[in-house]
Image 1: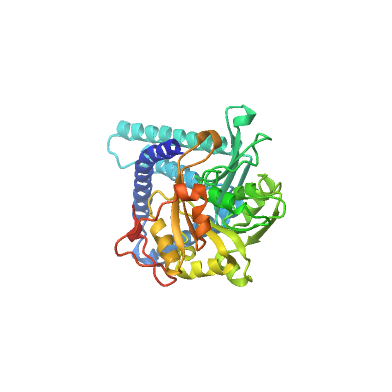
Image 2: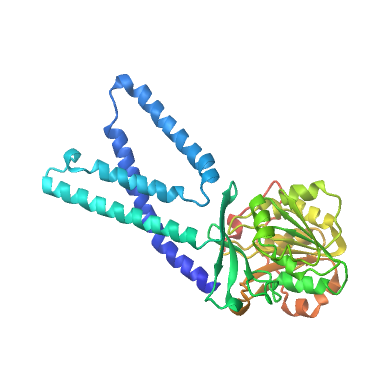
Length: 395
């Protein structure tokens, strides 16, 4: 996982200046053409009205039409290709303002070659992206992709769900390992140890905020009840049809569509033994799930000795003190459990904060040996529905 992150960072270091340069060129050409085509004062009202109408049409195409007709974020490469084609049109020799005819022709030929190369590259990337996918889908919440990876050996092949560029779950395709928990939910992770401690009792009730591929259902046993909450209907459909954690679970599995906090507020107390909160998408933080009021709601749905497990892995924000402060304000104990990568088992580095009022949970050997107190941050205030401060927890 660390190697993958390093590779992503290297790609960003290349892509950011390239896209920035492309944006600069496109905007300069587009605005330059608007200025050049500006009519006389008599027609200025119509001119500015058309510019506004064009902006509105663009917003409709990107916000409404593209998510409905495109299965990925293809409007960006299409827009780049159109802009490059327009640059070629603007630089054609007969309309160029370059005094030297041969220089004007050379610039035009160079821009045409660059445009054709760009269109070819973008077309290849889109084709490669689509061909390597089992499923591509997109809605208001983003673009989802299901694809298989591996070296051809069945035991090593895995199926991935990605949301944009973010991995939302993996499953081994090997029949003997397909129900093995992976990514942030392996046996030696915070949620893994929490569920193993809970499994000392029968008939568990487990709530999970954030479905993904449904990996946590890999821990289920006959007689257990697992209840997932997710706001994205596409994620629910994919978890049921493309991955086997939910369909082949031995427990009773319920999936609730909608915002998790609103759904919990409408429900009667569920008496969960474990409630896992894992609704973060990349580095986007749903603050409303980390406030004191949210934690009060969570513990209303937990049994008196139940455990709240919050996944706080994040490259840029230190969320553990936020969770610990909310927990302590309710008289609960909080501890942090970290784990390292385990490439052989497709397990990623992760950080979980486990919260409970039950001392026997913290005395469980693995919890006792691995859990550490959350480090306090000076001047950090407890987050509420009326107050939060992301800048204060930047790493």
